[in-house]
Structure formats: structure tokens, C-alpha cells
Image 1: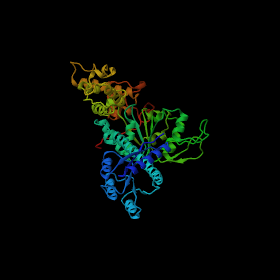
Image 2: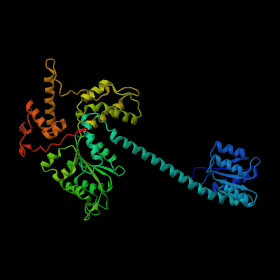
Image 3: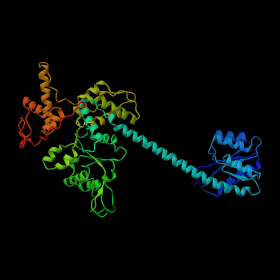
Image 4: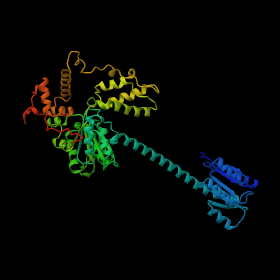
Length: 509
């Protein structure tokens, strides 16, 4: 198979010598199936310079005695056009000084035009072509490395741009409180537990903590603890040694070793089996892991950020989650509010996702019609931010180029949505009565959503438990499983969901 042609510029005023050198190039091409030498001829220095300015040459055979140029001067002008051009200086003079001057001037080699020069020419060209190919390989390798480096930097910039702290959309008081806690988690070594419903952005916060902290240059590895069977999860996290079980034909590092020096994000930590919780506790306490089937431990330096959509306090009380592990993980708890509790963020998030997906789809979209954003703000978003993101992506795909997103494009489930607070407002009630009805419905719905957990309900509403109990009593809201609406005394068995208050911190405190 022939390679890319190598263009050889023959600068020779003697037609016979030029033909002989061109014939030698053709002969070399015929004898070597991997070689293709294409001769280009120029009879004087001006012609040679014009050729070089017009089209590239890979090698130049330059005669010293030209009618319009001294060979050394022409060599300088050629190098001015292309500094790395390989030039073989050809002369019928045996002067060593001319050869030395030519090499000093930048010639790669020289050829004395004697009775044997056509036998010497292939040897010089073969050596030069070898150097030429090495240089081309190095150039292509550099271009590939440069391209890969640019792509890596582009992806890194995009990733950091996506997760950089200041780019998290947060206009609401609920998210302001979240970012206040995130700021304090960034440079701390304490355990971080991110709680919240599915789709609220727990991994986004985990990545923000990693990418803004001292471990930003090290790996960030995420694992969903509910995505794998128990035995596979153990080997995935802690590694496995050869022969530990059928099919374990080699040692394999676990994610903790892969994340050494960086951060491991354990999503759905509440689904982790109890015996793996014990191994995880050992990592937190001693920074040690033991691969599956091994009798020896290995040291790892990893920061653990965990997340859950469950109530781990209830899981701990029920014996499904280890207390000691919970307290280790929850040194810095961060509760992600559902999207319905941060409605001020919805228009900003929608515009944020519009910019991302319009660019990704290569489509110009002028924005949202006002009634679309109004519907977005009324809708409850059970799938939270992830549902909003998917809806905006779908709308970008259906929207025509250069148009605004209209209400008719919105999913039927959104257009058919009826607020649970419809019917609470009428023309006869005063404002105080209407507000009381809405407040009663909000408190009741939140208690139901959080399965009667009054600590979590109070925190999600931004009030303390005493205020919550007052509202439950005021509106006659029934407790879960027949529990009393009044606060249970300390240590009461009815207070199984009542962990000590977690103060809702304000950015101004």
C-alpha cells in the first residue's frame, strides 16, 4: 500500500541532470511498494521560490550553480519560506568549504555531482525519508496530543462550569441555606450527608463540594448503592482478589482505591446492606479497606460524600441503618429542598436548561412564552429538577428554529395539572381565612409526604418543631398512625421520629 506522496522539488538548470534525478526517484518508487516520490522541477531560483510559495514540498534537491541565484543565498530564502524544509545541496564542485557553508546555512545533506552521484542519491534520500517520516510521525503525535489536551481541557472547563459553586442556580431562600452549608463543607474533612427527594440535585452538590475543595485535581467517583446486587456492590467498592469467588480470575481494584486522594460519592446510601455498612464505617474511622477474599487491609485516602432519599433517622431507629455510621456520615447534613419548595428558582432553572440544550441541539430558541413559565411555577414537579430539565430538553427538540416555546408544546401532564390548592380560594372569604386554608393544606401535605416525620417536616418548612405542633393543633391536622398532635414528652415512645432539632442555618447567622 502506497503512503502519502513525498513531493521532491528538483532545482536544476541542466535539463539532462534534472531528468536523471527524476528518473531515479521513479525507480525508487517502483522498487519500494511503501514509497511514492513525486518530482517537481524548477529551472532557476525564482521558479523554485514561486513553487514553494504556491504549493508545499517535502524535500528539495538544490543545485549550487543556478543562473539567477547563488545556492547559499537561495537556501536562506527557502528557509525564510519554510524554516524546517529538508534541503539536499547538489554541486559539481568538490570544495569542502561550499559543503560546510551549505550545512551551516541549514542544508540537511549535500551531494557531489560526480560520475557516481546517481548511486549516492538513493542512499541520501532513503536516510532523509526516514528522518522525514519520523518527523511526520512526531508532528502527527503532537497534533493528536494537542487535540486530546484541548478536548480534555474543554471537557474539564465544561464540567467545572457545570458544577462550579457560583453556577448552581439558587435564587430562593431554601437554596441559599443549602449553599451556605455547602460553603462550609468544601474545605472540611467531616462527613457530608446530602438528603432529599430523587431528582433534587444531590450529585450536583456533591460534585460542587469536590470541584471547589482541595481534592479537585483528584478523582471524583460516584456509585449508586441500589444499582448493584450485594455481592457485586462489595467487590465494586472494595475490590476483589483472585480466587475470591467463581469467575474472579484476577485481582481488581475497587472504587475506593480508584478514588484515592479524591472523593467518592455514595448515592442511595440507605440501600447499602448492613454488613457493608460495617466495612464503610472502617473506611471512615481508619482509612482502611479490605478487598473481597483478602486477609490484608489497604490504606486509602478518600473523602466520602453520601446521599439518600430516605429518612436515615427512621431507618436507624428501625435497625435498617447503623447508628454509628449515620452519625459519622451526618456531621455536615445538607437537605436538598424539593423544587416545589424553591419556586423562585424555576424560571432561572428553565432558562439555564434552555441555554444548555439549545446549544447542544444546535438550535436558536428565543425563550419561553410567559404562560409557559407561569405553568412551570404552578406545577408541583414530583420529579424535581431532573423532571424540569427533561421537560425543557423535550421542548427544545420540538420547538421550531428561531421561535419561542409556546404552551401547546408543553407535555400534557403539565397542561392538565390542577393545583391541590384550587378550591381554597373563593369570592366570599377574607385574606386571613384563605391564607389559613392554604397553610393548613401545606402542613398536612408535607406531613403526609414525609410520612409523619415532624422534625423533617419542620425543617423543610423552615420552622421549628414547636411552631409545627402549634399549627397541627390549630388546624386539627391528624397525626400519622393515630399519634397525638401535641408534642410527646422527652423519651416518649411516641417520639420515634423526633431526633434533636437541627437548626436551620441562615446565610446571615
